[in-house]
Length: 457
Image 1: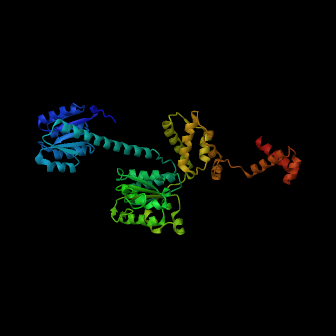
Image 2: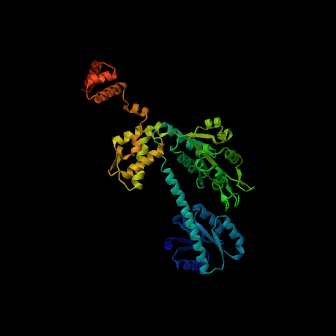
């Protein structure tokens, strides 16, 4: 990627005017935006009003030496790249500055090409730091845009618990059906914790073959097994100082459960093919859509592991249990996909909203989100109607409880009358024949139909 060097601001701090002038000239000739000062306190004043990408600073300065200035610079902005200038006799001091966060040091005397080379290298480092910060912010924003609490008491209770446990390092077990947002909750916990700037590693236990589990989680040495051509880090090593999310933990083989228990208890493990013990500091969040106590009784899940994971349990209820949240989620996803798909869809029709409230959503929030994405993509109007949902979804039977709630469930009287009318239709309108088939008298048919007419009128 081509860099506009005129947008890169460099500050040079040195009490020797000839050094400042020489550095400024060398860097301005290749396009950098350079400012100089002879005084360290003046440099701090400048930094209160302006930000710089790179600062070049002499170790020996009056009033405040370069090491103290470096520390103050890092307090103002820890991502500022600082290059120290030192005399040969001050190399030990320069090395100390590296430990305090300086990027590199240059020994006097140096020529223009040397300073250009080191500044260009520093610029690449600065770009990597900025990109890393941008990606972390983007990832955080992307995942947290899906966090909608809604109005339901169940979700407010769950999120209050999430807030309480986020700042601890305790293991957490998240329970809930597929698609309720267990991973989103795990990410919320991670991003609200001191570990937020460190890795968040997802392990889908349901997607790993049994024979590769140990390698995936703990890594392996070259030659540990056929196909192991290189050393490989496992998920736990990658997650060091961060969080590991063990999704669908109930699918983990029993032999691996024992090894995970060791990591939880001792914070250590061995790579496949190695005797070296590796120590890690990892917070563990596990999730499952199964009843682990039932799995324990069946012998497929270790009771001791369950108790180590289940320090705090967070239950995410299914969407059908919190219908009041559906309009909130629906409008939230509508706004997201309007933006992503460059659409201007204003709302949902009454029949579309009624359908969403009565449908059972077996895939929970994930299914609702995908259904709205499809509807936004395919509709040619400025409103989403019931017909814009997939035919497969529309054919699903509504939940009986939902029908009763909305008043749409047919009464026994209505069902009986509807059946009588269908039989009459099959008999070509001959009510006497219909009565014989139904084993009731023609008078009963006439009375039922008359009651219906009176109800209608």
